[in-house]
Image 1 (cartoon, rainbow, N blue to C red):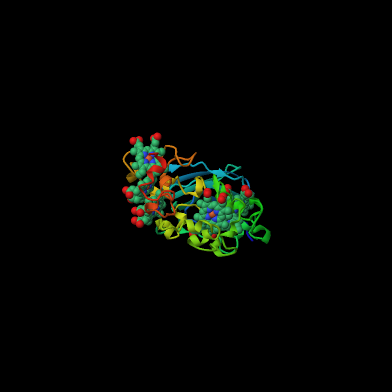
Image 2: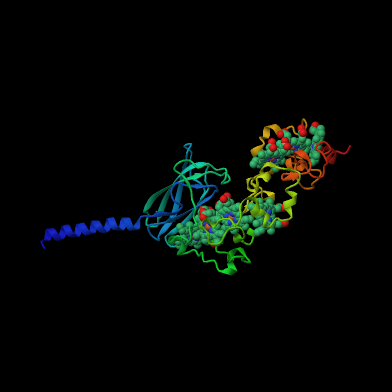
Length: 324
Ligand code: HEC
Ligand code: HEC
Ligand code: HEC
Ligand code: HEC
Ligand code: HEC
Ligand code: HEC
Ligand code: HEC
């Protein structure tokens, strides 16, 4: 071999090695897939850096309306070359870019688009190009299974403490709100989700699921006059199935839950002129504020207009609070 050919050869293989090393070392977003739709915020993004000397990640989020933010992200400490970034989402399309920085001062850019539509799944519209994403598709992806475990042994189906559940490390945020729904306090997820099914499908649909346990409430929800969403079994338009920052597992403050469907403007001077609907104590329920449900039973009633079952008609309700 001539010297020239050897030199070319060396340059060539060095070049290849460089290209190969760039390919092998490029950082990637392991989860979620690009163009996923989320109905909950924050989103957890799992990044594999190009090397283990990963130091920090900076996040910039440009939303649909041109707003650019550098959100407060929660960076779990990197485990080897893996880092989990928890990002609060803005309503609509989030174009998120990550600047991954390494200890040797190198850095690289990664990009991801997420649609955040915080409606109940049933009400959420999915624009073209975005897809609701089903994560559990049989087994855990290999890239997660190196650290996370999904082999549910029988003693973990109804664990004594949350941390014994294989669901806990990834889903602990689902129960980190003020009020936690009964079965979730101990991570009894598999009372409602079918073990091993794709997407952990529910064991029953609509209110049938709820009445598996809330047997006593069933008759209370089916008095003579039944509220619209209750009659169609849509418990979850008002209640959250996992946990909530509002009492009674509501998705929002009581009056805001109601005004989603009964626009608020009509109920400021309601039921009579200058009557308050909030902001004063409820005379019948010590410690609670007056609200729509001080007078209306949200589920059903023997009195029309869903009046609280104490009163015999919508007129006699006044004297429950106002002594004659
Ligand atoms: C190198 C190890 C490792 C790999 C690989 C890994 N994780 Fe994790 N993950 C962890 C650790 C450690 C935690 C923190 C657990 C805890 O706090 O109990 C965690 C937490 C999480 C959380 C909860 C984060 C939070 O703050 O709420 C989610 C979601 C998650 N992982 C998803 C995934 C997914 C999806 C994959 C695969 C794409 C994956 N992880 C791959 C180690 C890993
Ligand atoms: C009381 C029944 C019930 C229990 C217990 C329950 N879930 Fe759910 N879960 C539901 C229902 C209902 C949905 C909504 C499904 C839909 O909208 O299609 C859901 C949806 C989900 C979703 C997708 C939507 C979201 O909120 O992000 C996740 C993730 C989830 N459940 C995880 C869990 C985990 C983890 C546990 C255990 C801590 C658990 N669930 C316990 C009823 C339950
Ligand atoms: C490796 C982490 C990990 C573990 C372990 C895990 N999940 Fe999930 N799960 C996810 C991620 C990521 C999603 C996607 C939605 C999200 O980001 O919250 C998801 C979504 C879901 C959904 C919504 C449907 C779907 O497949 O997208 C349900 C229901 C659910 N998980 C239940 C469970 C239950 C029950 C367990 C325990 C038996 C469990 N998960 C264990 C990471 C995990
Ligand atoms: C596996 C059993 C189980 C299932 C299924 C179940 N729940 Fe519950 N739920 C409970 C337990 C246990 C409590 C706590 C009871 C208590 O504190 O009195 C509870 C409490 C609640 C509360 C709070 C009541 C209060 O006074 O604050 C609401 C609201 C609720 N559930 C709604 C639902 C809805 C909606 C569904 C259907 C999606 C459902 N539950 C399905 C077991 C269940
Ligand atoms: C998901 C939508 C939805 C939500 C949320 C909702 N409602 Fe309703 N409501 C309806 C529907 C549908 C009807 C039936 C309308 C009809 O029959 O004309 C109804 C009817 C009523 C009626 C009786 C009207 C009549 O003329 O008889 C009252 C009172 C009422 N709702 C109060 C409330 C209160 C209080 C809340 C909050 C706790 C609430 N609603 C939340 C959908 C909703
Ligand atoms: C102090 C008691 C009281 C409070 C608080 C109250 N209501 Fe009413 N509401 C009534 C009475 C009484 C009627 C029947 C009035 C009538 O027949 O004209 C009524 C009627 C209704 C109706 C049916 C008639 C209509 O206007 O469409 C709806 C819907 C309704 N209320 C929703 C609400 C909502 C939403 C709130 C909370 C923002 C609320 N109410 C708070 C007493 C109350
Ligand atoms: C659940 C209890 C409750 C019921 C039922 C109720 N009210 Fe009231 N009402 C209140 C409270 C609380 C106030 C505010 C009192 C205060 O500010 O000290 C109030 C205030 C009023 C006021 C004074 C408004 C003002 O500031 O000028 C009138 C008038 C009134 N109510 C009439 C009625 C009539 C008519 C009915 C029946 C249709 C009725 N109320 C049903 C609790 C109730």
